[in-house]
Length: 128
Image (cartoon, rainbow, N blue to C red; front, side, top):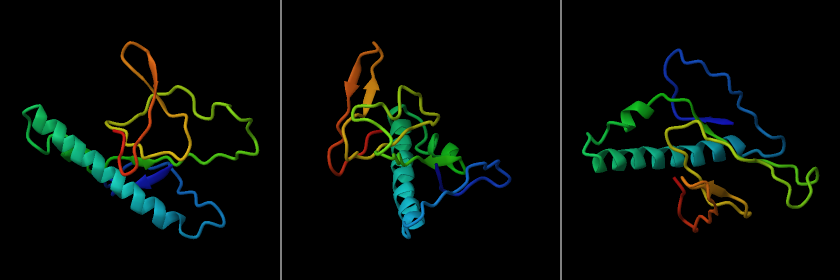
């Protein structure tokens, strides 16, 4: 996990910033991409609030100082067989989850009727 955004004063913050060896631009890349994803979530929250007839900042204000995390899925492909599940069924812990385009297939969502649907995020788009 990579912490993004400003944290609230005195907040518990147990997530270490791990920088993989040999990737000199890791911190800068994670901060840049994480801030963009966070801003997309803030904008989506503003749009949802407006759509619900609330003040534009009803959700966005609550996101300030939150424990926002970027979770890059790094996988040692030498350890796993082709077709093995790397991240199974799970719930995300956030108000909104923002997901970028993956270079590999395998991202699914479950609909309310528990039907599993493969998600394909078009280039230049985000899944929220």
